[in-house]
Length: 156
Image (cartoon, rainbow, N blue to C red; front, side):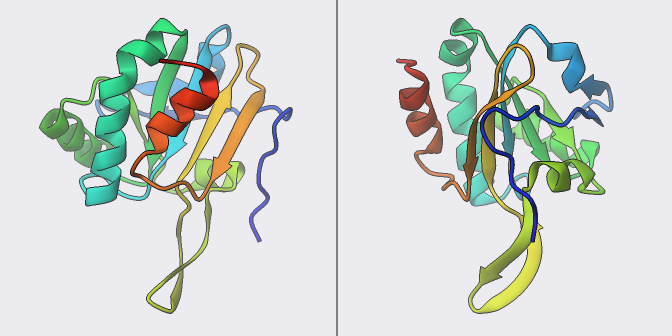
C-alpha cells in the first residue's frame, strides 16, 4: 500500500525535466505557493480536460500567488506535444520512473472494468511557501476538479 501525504507534512523534494527537458526543482520554488497535480497520461480525454481547466484558471491562480505544476509518467517529448496542442502555459514534468509519484502516494493499485493494475492515482497537492503540504486530494475527478480547488482556496 502506498503511503499518502497528509496536510502539515513536508512535501518531498524532487527535480524533474519539464516538457522542454529543462530541470525543475521543487526546492527552487520555496517562497511560492504551489499547486502540484499528478495525472495519468498526456493527451487522453480526462487529462486533457483537467489540464485545460488549469490553463483556463492559470491567471486567477497566479494572481493568488500559486505556481501550477503538472506531473505524469510521460516522456518530455510527449509532454511538449501535449502543451503545444492544447496551449498549456505551465510546466508539465516527466516522472518516467514514477519515483516522485511513489513519494507522493500517487502511484498504486487501480481498478478498471474489474481488472487490477498499477497506475497513477489522479491527485492534487497545495504546498505553502515553506514546502509544507496544506491540501492533499487523492482520487480526484478530472472534470470539475479545478473549479472545486479554486473554491476551496477562495479564488474566484
